[in-house]
Length: 331
Ligand code: NAD
Ligand code: TDX
Image 1 (tube, helix red, strand yellow):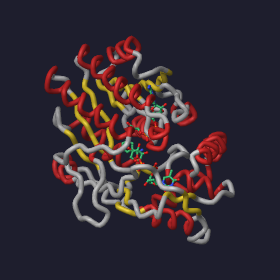
Image 2 (cartoon, helix red, strand yellow):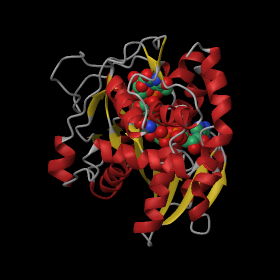
Image 3 (cartoon, protein in one colour):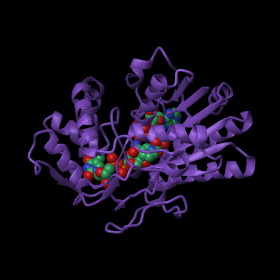
Image 4 (spheres, helix red, strand yellow):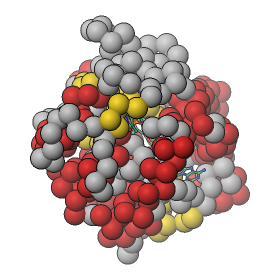
C-alpha cells in the first residue's frame, strides 16, 4: 500500500510512521509535513532510509494533488494542535486545519483515494466534572476553543465530502495521547522536562480538569484498524478508559521522578478550560476488536519519563523558547 501520511513529523504521526516501518513492511510511506515548530526531521531520523519525507504545506493544492495522485490511501494527521497557541493566535489553525483538510479532500475526491481523517474528542466540548457520561459518536459537536472549533469544522467537511461526493473517508476522534516524541509545550512532556531542567512544574488552575489518557501506540493501532476495516463514512471514537485529573497526573510525574508531590506551582487557568473529556469506545472494541495494550498508566508514564531522560538531544533546543512563551502568557 502506498501511504501518504500528512503531519508525519509530529508527535502522533511520527509514532505512526515508526510503527508502519516496524510492522508493515508492505507499506510504502511518504510523509508530507510543513516542519512547523511542532514537526522535526529528527523524529523520523531512525526511519529516514525507509520513508520519503516531503517538506510542504497541506494547504498547497498543487503539491497535495501530486502526492495524493501517487498514493493508495491518506492518513491525515497534519494540524495545528496546541490549545494555548490557538487562544493566542487562531489564524494558523484556520489555515492548516480547515483549508488544509479541504485541500486534502479535494485531492482524494479527484483521485478516488481512500482517506482517514484524524481528529480529537475536543470537538464534543466538555462533560460535567463529576458526571458518569462519556462521549459517543452521536454526541453533538460543541467545541470550546479555536483549536477544537477548527477540528470540528474539518470533521464536518469530511462528512460532507463523503455524503456529497462519495469520498471514501473515515474519521476518528481520540482522547489525550501521551508517549515519546510529544512536543514539550504539551502537559506531560512539559512537566517532565521542567523537572529535568531544574524548573518547577506548572499546573493550570486547581488541576481538577480531567483528561482521558491513551498511549500513542494504542491510538495508532486503532487508526490502522479503521483505515483497513472501518466502514466508509463512519466516525470511530478512540479511548482507553484513562480518565485522570491533572493534579493526579502531575503528582504521578513528580513521584516517579523522585520529587516531593507538592513541588510545583499553580499558574493562572486557561481561558474556557474544558472540565472533563471521556470516551466511550465500545463500537471500536466490539466491531473492530481493538483493545489498548498500554493499560497501566503509571507504567506508560514511567516509560515516557525514561524516554525524555534518554532523548534530551531531541527536546533540549526547544525547551527554553517554549518556557519563554509560557512566561509571556503568565504560565
Ligand atoms: P503535533 O502538533 O505534534 O504534530 C502536527 C504535525 O503537523 C507537525 O509535524 C507539523 O509540522 C504538521 N503540520 C502542521 N501544520 C501543517 C501544514 N499546514 N502542512 C503540513 N504539515 C503541517 O500534533 P499531534 O499531537 O501529533 O496531533 C496529530 C493529529 O492528531 C492532529 O490532527 C490532532 O488534532 C490529532 N489529535 C491529537 C491528540 C493529542 O493528544 N495529541 C488527540 C486526538 C487527536
Ligand atoms: O503546563 C500545563 N499545565 C496544565 O495544567 C499545560 C501545558 C497544560 N495543563 C493542563 C491543561 C489541560 O487540562 O493539562 C491538560 C492537558 O493540556 P494539553 O497538553 O495542552 O492538552 P489538551 O488541551 O487537553 O489537548 C490535547 O489533547 C487533545 C492536545 O493538545 C490536542 O491536540 C488534542 O486534540
